[in-house]
Image (tube, rainbow, N blue to C red; front, side, top):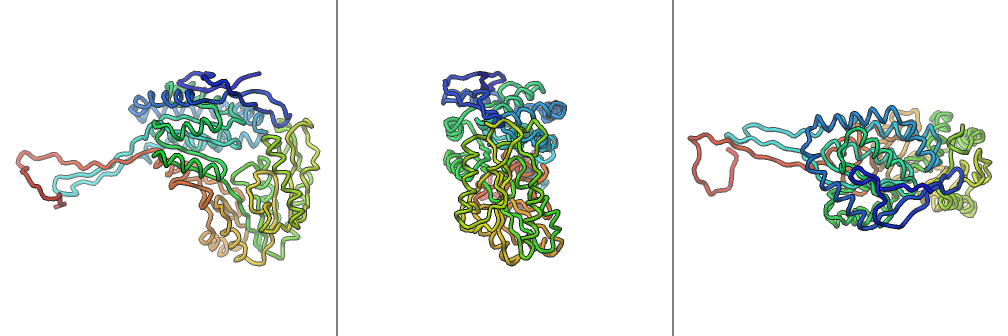
Length: 496
């Protein structure tokens, strides 16, 4: 059985722990690898490597750091089909989706190549007689990135290119469910010329997470995952004095107004609801339809769902399996729950015939209409291919429903009314908004992050927020004295 190791100080190592975790091929339902799980000694080894490498990396010129990142970008661009294949094997998403994940992550690498411009300080001359003031942005030190299973390449790339570009060193803790992508990235960074210890991969579970949150040498933590864990990470890391950006869960709504293009809305609902088997924090899982168009829209969605092919992502399929059998069973349990709550199951994904091994973790696209807002089918982040339809009488009722949710990650409105769209973007309490765009993930030059229980911390991922998160600011007040000027004055300094 192949073992997936840590990558510490430029070398793959099994570390000191004897604990192992099974890694599945979810399309076949079989264990194909095992990943080592870190203990406290392994955590300290990874952090020590990052700590020892920090001073030299910090002091390297911007130009030399950017050359390494540019080389990494070129290698990634040439070889990203390799990474996509690794993602499909361990996560299950279809190859085209995996390739899209890598490409969106590459956007942040390219954004980080311009980091010197955004990390510039400011300068004011002659703020007082003979006195200038200027600011500096400097790296924090070793930082930790804790990433989820659903985007094993893209989510780490939201963070580490900016952390590295600004002079920090990194310890990445990927999900133990699909850990190989992180090792592939680490090896590619080494090939690009990154010095040993600057980027480390620590495999593990809660032991590794808790160790990083508590370690005194870790200066900042970036996390993406479910809301309960995001809150836990934020509280533990801030209590330990660290800077934290912790992105949590979602229940994303798509509001469809009666004037919308229903064919466009139907296509969008399917794309945003069932891509990556619904295992996206930006997936649309709640379709809020303003009457009287719900019957027509539901019929159009159901018609489009029928030819969708669920199967092995390495074949010509539209949707792959879920990540584990346990997760598949949990998602499927919401279907009888919906029936018990009085909803109507229009298409039941439990009856899917997959194009793949019968032991795979299959659940087909599922459409549930007339879902009560009191049902856990509506309230919970299901994180699977289940699209719920909620019917409302007006735009106002739809917005009130969205704003009442504990989550505020992403939302969308479908309409041909520019005034309604403008009103929506002002009134809705959600961090990322799409107007006739179902998955409003911003490009890398803007920042990714939600509102309410979907984020903990003040700064979001990538964009200008990413630069601010991974740097600290110093203000320098400077005077070069004229030989004829001086003297003692014990009064409080005044600007004159």
